[in-house]
Length: 96
Picture (tube, rainbow, N blue to C red):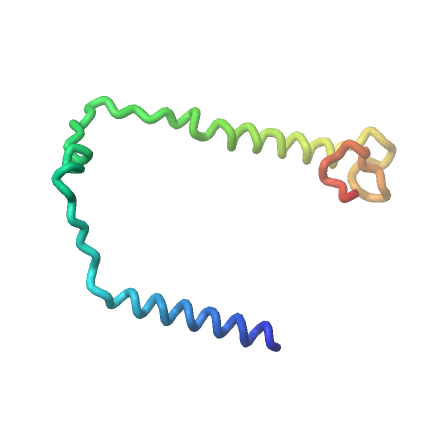
């Protein structure tokens, strides 16, 4: 019961901070003359972002996960599956 009261108190505090900061005046940034050059970069017409390389680690981990599932459900022992301890010891799905 005490944990619930702490949780409610923390959430109420965070909500109060949110409401307080929501109604503050917006921050106006002043750009100094020596940093104006940072914002004057020319636009590039051929902006090419290689999305294949961006998603390659995700696809590699997803394919590993599917092979793990296949190795856990298709056991070479009699009976197959996870019932009765028939999962091979090399299966990453088993708990030690």
